[in-house]
Amino acid sequence: MTSESAGSAGKCVSLVKMHGAHNTFVLVDERPARCADYNGLARTLCARDGPVDGADGILVVLEAREASVAMRIFNADGSEAEMCGNGIRCIARYLFERGEGDAFTIATGSGRIGATVTARAPFAATVDMGPVHFPHGVEEEALEVSGTTWRLYEVSLGNLHAVALVDDVDTVDLLALGKALQTHGRFRTGTNVHLAAALDTRTLNVRHFERGVGLTQACGTGAVAVAAVAIAARGFPSPLDVRVPGGTLAVAWQPGGHAQLTGGAEFVLEREVEL
Image 1 (cartoon, one colour):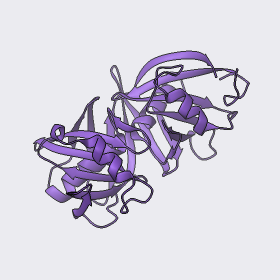
Image 2: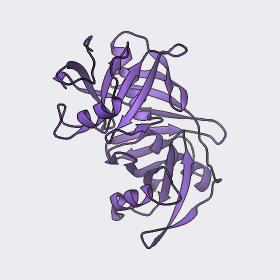
Image 3: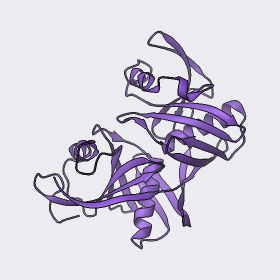
Image 4: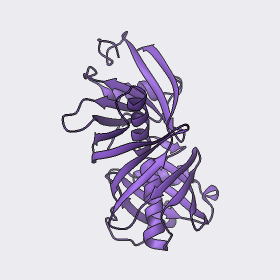
């Protein structure tokens, strides 16, 4: 970063674009903090016609007293998210490549999260995603959405997820369903929405709609949410491979314990841009 504010027009800022299973982010290293408007910065940087050809969100790396760093996540629409498993792996790789270690504690809106580099070539990191909560128990809830009854599981990993187990994820208009659930009375602040279909006893095929973004290639907390539903409600074994449009993530979880999410993180570009 330059010594000038990232939130001011006409200032040059050094940005790193990364992805975790093609869930794309622009990483902004704010150590020390200089920007006054991360919401606006996210809308600018995530625009598909913007300076880095768009992204799903921005990751703001901040100094922290009782953690390696702090992370704030802002979606493409400028809204702030509590937690992001794919984003944490990107931050772990960024810190690792800078020589800041290979095991990190990252403070997030959902609490402190541990991330450990587990492989270098190809890069992989495992994130301790914390406990998985089912706010209304491990039961499907029937909701009428745009004239259709959907059976959904509600899952929380510090952020909220609605999971539907279906026969084929490609036969559902997930964009329409996701948009409808953002204004449904059941989810007053919106929700992430995921479709999951079993390919075999250890593999799930998954598609994601993320609150504040739309359809995405991957969602780390969403991958954990669908795996937890399969394990707790349908008796699937742990660990599970979760195939998302952007690649494959591995999820290990036992009811009552912490979930572990393993996957890669890749650099796309580093660029100095004028805002």
